[in-house]
Length: 526
Image (cartoon, rainbow, N blue to C red; front, side, top):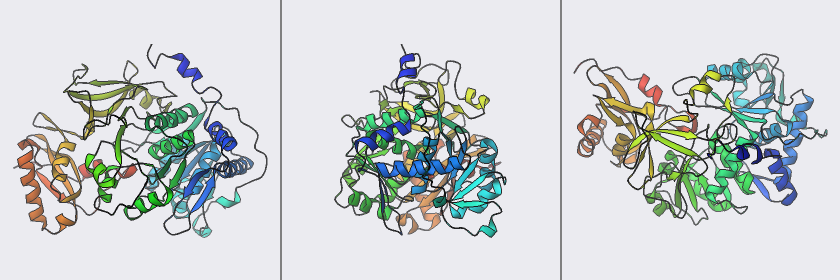
C-alpha cells in the first residue's frame, strides 16, 4: 500500500490535533521555556516563553474576534520579520482565521492582486507599507499597523497593533487537522503568484517531518533570518514548535551579525540559502554550538571553514517537508542533496516518460497525500491545482534532477532554466558553477538569450567579488570566458557577459531570472 493510498495516515495521523494543540501542550509542560528570541539590529533583545507567546496570541485573537474576524476569514499579513508577525500568525490559528502571508518586496500591483484574490476581512502591515497596502484595499477592509503612521496619508481607518489585544475570553475551538491553516503565494516567476493553501495537518506534517529529519530536541535552538512570510521560515518555525525548541529571529540576513548571534544564543542549527554561505565565506568564526547548516547541497568546504556539518534537502511550498534529504550519519558526496525521503514517493522521469535510473537525469514528480504531505489546493483556482498534478496524481515539481551511479541525487535546474542550445540541453547551473569557480565572482546567473540560428545561447550576468573588482570589466570578462572555454563544451560558453551591482530578486533572495531574460535583446545575426 502506498502512502497516497494509506487511509490510516490520512485520517488518524493528526486526529484531534492542530497547531494550537501543539503550542498548548508545551505551555502545559514547559511554560517558562523560552520559545522566541527577537534579536533586532538596533534595539534590545526581547524574549517570549511558550506561555507568554500563547497568551499574547490568544489576546490578539480575542481582539480580532471583537472586530468581527471569525472562523475561516482571511487575514492578509504584509509584514517583515517581527514579533508582531508571530503573535498575529498564532493568533489567527487560535481564532480559526487564515493568515495570508505575502512577500513584502511585492510591487503595488501584486498587493492589489493578493487582495482581489483573497478578499481579506482584515490586513496587518508595517508602517512603511501602510500607504501602498491601503491603496490596494477597499475602505471596508480593516487595517492594523504595527506602529505609528501619518494617518493623513492613509484614507482608511487604522488601528495600531497594540490596540487590538483584549482580555475577553476566547471561545475554545475544536482541534481539527483538516481546517484551513494558512496561505502563502508562490513566487510567480513565470506567471501570477498562486495562493497555496495549507491545512493544519499540512503544518503539523511539515513541522514533524523536519524535526524527524534533523533529529531535533527541546534543547535545539535555531536562527531564522529568512522572511517569515515564506514557507521555508514557517516550516522552520513549525519544526521548532513540534520539538519544543527555541527560535531566534533576525529582521533579515546579516553576515556581520550571523556568527555573533549564533554564539550569543547557543544556536544549534540554521536553514540557509546559497547566498548566505557565500557572504559568510572568509569571515571570522567564533566558538559556537552550531552543528547543522541546511542548504541545497552538501558543502564540504563550508564544513571545514565553519566547523559544522552541512545537510541538504529539497522541498517546495507545495510539499511542505523535504522530499529529498541527506542523513547526518550518511551525508553523501559533495554537491548531493541526498536521497528520497521515506515519507514521500518520488519519480524521476526522462523526456520520453520512462523512469530515470543511475547515471541519468529527468524531471522530478512527487506522490503524497493532499491536505497532509502535499498542499490542499491553490485557493479558488481549480485549473492550476489540476495542472499541478499529472493523470496519475503525482505532483509535477518542474525541477530537473540527476541520479548518480550510487543513487545520490543532485539538483540541476528548474525545467524552465534549462537552455536548448542548437538541439543540446544545457543546465544553467553547470555554467554558473564554472563561472563561480574562477574565484572572481560573488554571484552569477545564466539565462537563455534568443539566437537566430541556435534557438538559445547562454548569457551570463555577473556580480564581481572584491578580487573581480580589481580588474577592468574587459579583463574580467576575458578571464571568465577563458575559464569556461577550458572547463565547458564550446556550446556552453556564454556568448554575452553582463556585469551588475545587484540582481533583481524574488522570494528567499532567489535571483529573478525571468527579469534577466526579459532584459536581453535577441541575437539576430553574427
